[in-house]
Length: 292
Ligand code: NAP
View 1 (cartoon, helix red, strand yellow):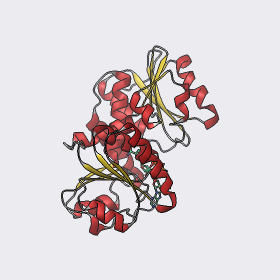
View 2 (tube, rainbow, N blue to C red):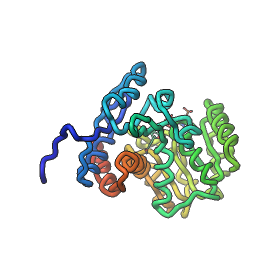
View 3 (tube, rainbow, N blue to C red):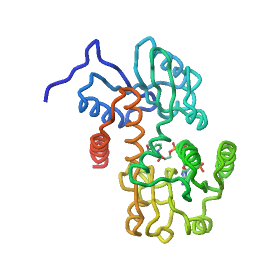
View 4 (cartoon, rainbow, N blue to C red):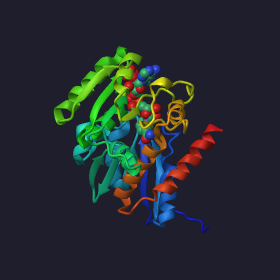
């Protein structure tokens, strides 16, 4: 293998967030750039909230081709962009910026990556009954893209923060003709709704490391044929995914969403097809290394 080193011609991309130490995106993107033999480099940048504007506008001065945006900057970056894609605008969050000749455009590939992960497994959510757990940032992106695709949504959040899910459902209802229901997260409601659901999405952080013995849905409520998509990727296999497999459900884990959001960003920056399988292998290796 020849050693690759950046030069004055290297195209620079990266990710901004705070904290940024644990990001898996550099592993995934740099492997993809080397695989394609293109002169690109991806770097992590820790950017404090009060300096987000400088970082985004600085893309033009530094000729940075693209940035991913992670917590806590996905909303703040929007005011520094020249254009925002219509889906990202509706969601109210941007996770990918493309610098096209000094015009900065924002996209939400968390949303399109989630959808692509489903489509890639041959599952089209159009016309399906989808149960979404959680009403945070990830749920918001997922709920909007699913509603736009024509799915029937029931979104859950715990009773203490019910207003959060009510507001989300109201907002989606304004831009969608799909039926959107908001419910309190409890066993009784889940049992009723899961009975004839097609797809279950866990967009809460329940089951995420270090709380790996937790699950948002009791084993007895899972059934054969249900599609269970847990967007958590740490651990790679959550308790929910393990129990869904035992119940005969079709499972998709958070790595698929993570990789597809990266792959779609890669394609916007390079105008080349992303090596999705390789990106998945690299992310899985990095995550499994972390779990040891
Ligand atoms: P967030 O904005 O903080 O939202 C967290 C959600 O989880 C909220 O709805 C919260 O409910 C709920 N929740 C937290 N603890 C709970 C508990 N004990 N019981 C019931 N509900 C609980 O976080 P986020 O950014 O949406 O991320 C959510 C998860 O998705 C994280 O694990 C994150 O790593 C993962 N994620 C994965 C990807 C990917 O590419 N695979 C992308 C983004 C996020 P309240 O409103 O009641 O607090």
